[in-house]
Amino acid sequence: MINRSDLENFWTRGDIHTRIHKAMSEAGLNNKKLEIEDLFPIDQYHARGIAATVDLGKRMPISENQRIIDIGCGLGGPARYFAKQFKCLITGIDITPSFIEIGNKFNNLTSMSKKVSLQIGNSETLNFEDEAFDGGYSQHVTMNIKNRKDFFLEAYRVLKKGTFFAFSEHGLGPKGNPIFPLPWADTSEMSFLLSPESTISLLKEIGFYDIQIIETSEKYISGYEKMIDNKSKKDKPILGIHVIGGATMKERSINSMKSIKEKRTLPFEIVCKK
Image 1 (cartoon, rainbow, N blue to C red):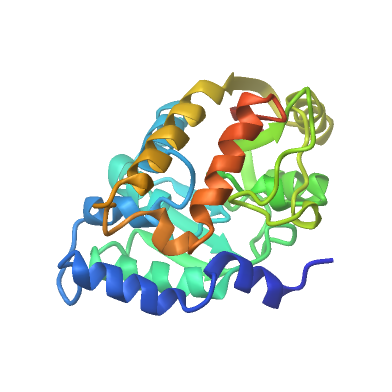
Image 2: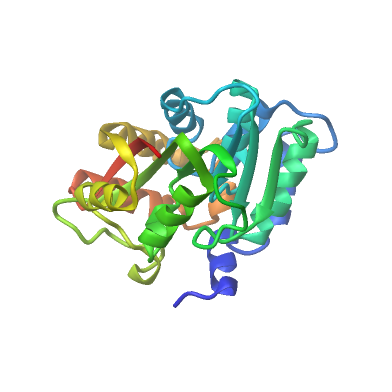
């Protein structure tokens, strides 16, 4: 069982506050009002970055002023994008305190605090009333959830009837056993992958319906290749997920790309209804 301290250490990789402050200073972004776009290189902490967030957003039927939950919000980058794009209200929860602290600071810097609220929370025991939200989503979180049924049950519980739930993840591929360390796990003790078939079966069991799935392997291979190529150049970008992921981010990204190519993992997106 991974405790909260170990989780915090895994995700922050040391003094994340100092690394972000230094990178933003070098990029000329400290102590000034920002647009959310200024933070895209650093606050979209998942493979493919903002492109993955935009793709998922195109599949989510969000309307203006709806209240949406982001389960596993990280630094809040996707939440700020969706709040601005759809003129909706986002409540984000994440188990990593440093991510929430930095994410709310980013909300202030981008004048998004009235649209986006981030708080510490556990995805398997959401601290919200039944049917509190008009929709929900999660990006690259479920790979770390051992009790996937509780995760989906809680998402189902807090959503109103007739609404949607969308998520993206790296599923278990036909060859199985990914190569560690990975962006979401240093060892198998932190990684709990399910096949797309098992995931769909579990969603149906809980009560979700109209389950639409899109495989995204080629997009992620391309995304990883671009990321790794950038990091091999002398003039690597100041801002990027390497600032969040620390010194081992390149190795973990390479392993994730290899795992997809060797069909050990299979990235996909799902949108379903309650």
